Every structure is written in C-alpha cells, then in structure tokens.
Length: 587
Image 1: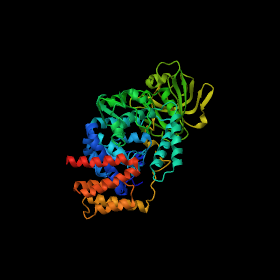
Image 2: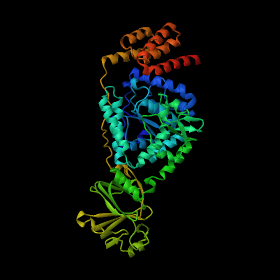
Image 3: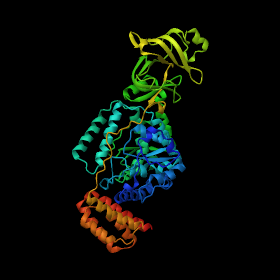
Image 4: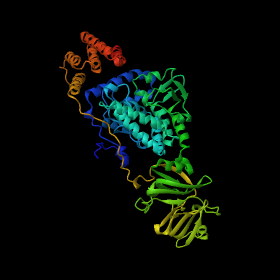
C-alpha cells in the first residue's frame, strides 16, 4: 500500500495495523471551490472565536502550521507538529473507534482529508479536514491538553466494545458517506438514517467503548473550559462550527454543568445542538476524570465481568492473570463459582504472552483451535500455585514427569503427566504443560488426551481484560475492509467551469495572475452560475481592498438576488460581507 508518508520519527513508530487506515492526502485534488470553502469557514470562525475560544486555539493555529487562507498540507503540518511531539495522517472518513484512539496513543492526529461540499458548508455528518484540522489540531499545541489526548487514546483503545457497537459504527459511517455525496439518493439516506436510529435505540447496556465515547464527546468534541459563568470553547465540534452552535453554546439557552464523571452517562445526538455542555475548570481536570473512569474499566478491574464483556464483544481481546500471563483471542465461554472465574475458553486462533511479548511456542500457529484453562487456587490448599516455592511444588506433586491430579476450587480438575513449566521474571510459574491430559468440570469433559499437549495457564485471578491482542505481532491485524468508501463522482462540465472561475480569483489574490478581470468573472458567474454565492463574496473582498466601489455595488446587488432565490444561504452571505467589511476597517 502506498501511503505516501514522508519519513517522520513519530509516524515510524506506528504499528502496521494502524498504517492500513492511512491514505494519501492528494493535495492537488482540492479544487479552488474547496479552498474557498476552507477560507470562508476559517475567516468566519477566527473572527468570532477570538473572544470566545480558549487562548490555546489562536496560538495553536500558528504553532500547528494551519493557515486561514489554504487547506493545510499534512506534510507541511507534520514538519511543524514534530516540534510539539505530534504528527498527522490522512484517513477516509470515520475509522473504527479503537483504531482512532490508538492513533492518539501514539501522538498521531487522525484527519479525514476530504472537505465538505459548498452545499454543506455549515455542517457535514462526515468528518472532514475543517473539523479535524481546524478544530482538533490547534488545541494540541497546549501541552496539558495534548497529554490528555494521548492518555485518552491509550486508555480508550483498551475499552471493550459490544457487537452492536461495531454494527453502529458501520451504519454511521455509511450514513455520513451518502449524506455528503453530491449524487445522494433521498430514499437511500432515509433508509440509512432509519437504520442508525433503530440501532441507537436498541444498543442495550452501554459498553465501555460507548461510555468512553461519551467522555470524548463532552470534552474533545464539545468541551467548555473555565468558569460556569464565563466559559471558553475548546471542543473541536464547537471550534469548527459555523452553523451558530459556537455562538449559541455560550448563551444561557444551553445549560452549563461542571465536568464530572457523570458526563460518562450523558448520551448525545450528533444531529442536534446540545441542550447541555460540561465545563472543566482547566485541562488538568480532564485527566483526573479520565483516570476516575479508567478505574471502572475491565483493563484495571478484570474479573468475571471483564471476561463476560469480551465474550459479548465477539471480537479479539485479552485477559491478564495475576502471574502476568496474557491470553489473547476471541473469548467464547467462562465458568464461574461464587462470582469468581474458574475457567476461561477461547475459540480459533489464540496466543499467550507475558508483558506484551508473545511466549515462544505459544503463538496462533500453536493454538489454532482455541485455548482453555482453569483459573484460581487448588481446592483445600491456601497457597496458590504461582506462590509456591520449589519445595511446595514438590510436596503437591507439581513437577516434571510426575502424573498428578489438580483439583481446583469450583470443580475443575486437571489430570495428566507434567512435561514442563514456564516461569516469569519473578520466578513464578505461569504455564504448565501436560501429556495424556484430561480436564473436566463437574460432569463435563473440557479436554481429552487425544487433543494433544495441554497447556494450563497459571493464575489465581483475572486482573485485567481489554480489547485487542497483548502482543500486536501475534495476529494478522491487516484485515480492515470498510463496508463503504467515500464517494467521489466525476465532475460535470458545468462544475469544472465554475471551478475555473474560482481558480482565476484565487490566482489573482495570490498574485499569480493580476491581469484577470474580476468584473468579467462576475459577469460570467451571474450569467452561467446565478445561484452560487461564495465566489461573489471572494470577488467582493478583492474589490473592497482595492476600493472598487462600482464593482462592490454590483456584487451586493447580485447577492441580494441570490438571497431572494435562496433564503437558506442568506445568513452565510451576510456573514461573509460583514467579515470583509470588518477586516477592512481593522486594516
């Protein structure tokens, strides 16, 4: 895969399974209309955000190499971002939540490189470079916030999803793609919206991923900072909004709540303005709440509930035992007694690891048909196997070439000839291998001698359960095939003609061609593209700078006609003219 990534120390650290999501930015694919859309949004936002955004935003625009006049080139951004320890990559729209967060854990900002259509300039359901580049990137220049973002990714990528989470992700991705497509079919959109709505209403008990996604929404996307009485904006969803939500959110019409762990349980609707927002006193407080939530996650609590969450996810996950032994696979069954795990079972390819490094001889090639093992202490013996000294092991017949029967609390029995064992760095046994082994639980046979060598994990408790493999190299993770891709249709002759007019005005502004007649461009616009409004704003700006009153009046007259025919863009036109006039006055 050609990802067209320039050499970069931060990007070089990315594991292969994350690189599969990266795509070339293809900067030359941005049209002059795309550039004008970026420019309009940025000029409108920066003009307004000067007074309501956290001070890190405007400072960050400069520090992260983001220009108001041009869509950011990620190669240029990366040369600047590396000085603050970050990098950026381009992706195609939404990517799986775990992958999105894992990128953050590596200090890499994920940017959907497509840009919204002019027709959707106020809002797009699809992630785009305006939201990602203009919203997310500037704030990471603040060291405290950047560390929060990295830590959020580190914790978030371990969150366990439910099977329904994956289904909802694909449905939302599909909806965002067809709604942004210029040839979208209304019936197809309605059907996709209905599917998303149905899934959202039938998600069942919230998964860890859905809960931490709530925290992400109320901080990274829609967060306010400061005091309840006078908060400032830092959330990317608000920073990149020109539909009025960035102004509306700071009024008394939106309820302001102190940011606490309670935000975890506050759901959100991406299609509507938020009726309440959470205010953090400072960026450091974000990390405190994140750690409070992490303490509730299976990655820290483990136990029976953690294993059950992995089973319900129907996806690759891992558990860690008290010895440090890690078992990675798709978990299919768990047996318990009095709320304690007494046996775990995976199906299909499984790998064993210690401290995130696969144990030699215990990869997926060695465990192709699943892995099962008792968990806990031996019946009637106070000391756990992992805590036994060599003398203890000998006393209980747990040593090589000895035929023994180990009866665990909870009713699991392992009988066979011990071959050998593996120990961890502290000298504790973490794995025991048996020949001619039979494993039973009450009246059920779990393993027979004809199955081959039996490898028994050693650990009295499950201390951690988390999404993904312990050792990233144990599994082939280069398997992501999105159900749908961003739609790019062939441009019509009429569209190309309009893009050419935009390009002429852009060339004039940038000094590439000062011979272009802006009056002639305006005349052609009115004649052939009478409903377009943004190019007229661009011409008005140039005419205003050069004090061409006659041309300015012609443009304003034309825009009044556009407003009458397209009242839905009236506010956009008025705002564009006001920005030009205000900028000229300040100059």
